[in-house]
Amino acid sequence: MVDLETVTVRNDLEDLPAVYTVLDRFCTGAGLSDAVRRTLCLVVEELFANTVAYGYPDGGKDQIAVTAALGPTHVKLVLSDRARPFDNSGIPSGPPEADTVEDMGIGGLGLYLVHQLADDVATQRIGNVNHTTVLVPRAKD
Image (tube, rainbow, N blue to C red):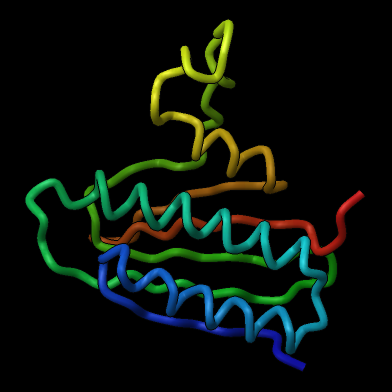
């Protein structure tokens, strides 16, 4: 049984598949459902992509660490980076009212989605490192 996996990759979207590979191995080893695996991948994708796009405005090179830990009722994801400070724990407002999907603006829904999929999202900055912790339920209702 796998109860902890960590992967460290470049702050580059091209490295996201390596994170998925580790999450897949973690979920298989822990006996987690495919629904939980997909949720973990989606949460990581949204947070990772936001960090890469907005956390390094000058395009600086860095590494992002992603850790998945198995708890009795949740999977704890922790993303650690040295990007600019950003607090992911604030719950954003829902999608704007729009007549059609095409009328909705691009962006702004990813963090909202993360909060909808997780039971808790918290960010802590220690020194120059952001640690975003997300608790994803192990079972879907």
